[in-house]
Image (cartoon, rainbow, N blue to C red; front, side, top):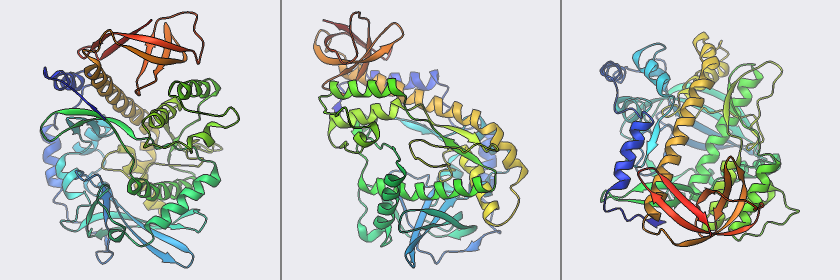
Length: 460
């Protein structure tokens, strides 16, 4: 965690500039708001009554756009996950104002000083959100999880549910969640190990707004409750992906792994951070030894995530197995329809498949156009996040011009050398010659300009 001394309010000014630069929407057009208000009053009439199932939600404490609620029961040696996903499609009709606006946005954008939602609050934080203040329409996916962590989609239905509790990652207790919650997470983790998955969950470097309106740059650790909760989404997304692929339809999340040059860059970054990575140990095996509670190991975990070739969306193609290298599985996004446009269509597809119905033509047509829309949305979200981090680092380092910092060369980029600072998770590019990957260097901070979101180091 790093305190940001910012008496000139450069951070607040810079965040406003980021919003303008990346065209972050400020509110919704009047026709979209009116459509949302009308849609929020729709009375569900195609839904079974499942209000007797004691669903709960588990999210960050401040979240109000709740996509998922869950319950778990034993079935012989298997576990049954009842995963209720917000029935966004009940409120959004193909071609209406909500739908058209969502296609221009792609996903919810998050900034330290607020978010720009995919849907208006009347839907995302009201009628469709699985809050415990009243019954809500949902799509319940029943996922069977075997002892070895293998998953299978047993069924799906539209239903009315009643969440019993809005649980938070930082305060949830074992008695708050179903008895087999931790066991399901254990099974999914063991299955990942057997598959050879290389998924990395580093603490997230973020700019956080405090109650007094100030900001700080911090690493937000991934709590055990958050990891266990993610296992539920993983189980559902994998089961849905397998079902779609078996029926030769769907939209999948695909990703290839880092190539040899990127692995070498990561080894150099580990050296820069003073971490021991034996030459005989693969990236996959090494990353599983990293402790996110240690700042230097957390910094390397972030670099590992950044070194991936990036995930993208891919519609079903005959003869092609959609593959996500980090998951070591066929994978899809279905569990966050309030925040990602693509999930709404995947949910509709899986619901049809599970009930022996044809996939709606509008859904099939959408799969062809969604990769471009979601790719653009993902890119903008990533650019905004990086810009906010760059801004915070510049604010943090401002006033330290002239100080020296130890670093190690990680790789070479256009017009420069990429270096990793040894004492903080900062990566920079310098102009230098005669250096090799892995070389140690001493750098002097030449400038830190929050207005340009720029930090410049020079080799000493």
